[in-house]
Image (cartoon, rainbow, N blue to C red; front, side):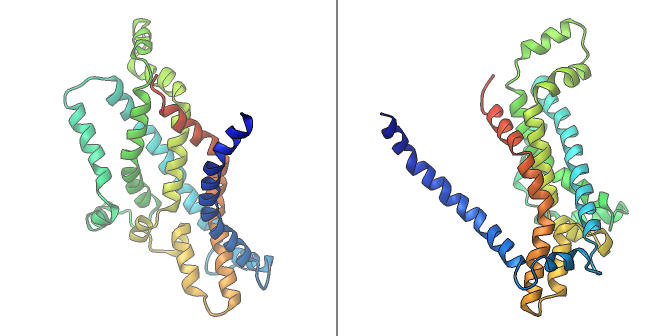
Length: 267
């Protein structure tokens, strides 16, 4: 009985291992290539590269990603609470209009986006990148949070109202603590999406000192590509620039799993 049960899982594990190998193989190849010829010297070269300050680039991306993630989380928790637990005229229409923004690709609004950022005086400014990232990430995160808030019983909130709790207090003392897994999910996903975004920084940033990792990587590749040593250094810079994002994902993986699991069960 036990052997037959184990055998039934073999095809599932085989498929999972196959797709895991597809995902991890390019990363393994990149790590191996980054150590060719000069070994750790490739990484030392990148860290001391005069045209790109590695730590400045990491700070730029970290600042953009963290501020975007916190802002999106604050806005969407408030909005999700309103759309899920508060009844007001036009709520369904407004919510549907926000979700419709998910169908609009970022590339389709580059011209008005650039004009808006320029008119606001935010070109070559971190907040010129943060504001669009907040706008583009908020609809998806609102959808996730609203669906999760719907699983929280209304009776619990009504009890709080009877006890004299204000709307803001209910959001702060009841909804947020009950939604920690999904809020962590939103924080991590927004951080990763903001860290990996390329198009918005390309539109906004002008000076190299303000480049995030996505632009710095391209600049490095266009600067050196003349020998096998340069190829190894390119792999090294890719690993170094991706490392913070990978570490954030690995450290927060349990929150992602908890958020997805919690959001899939109707309370």
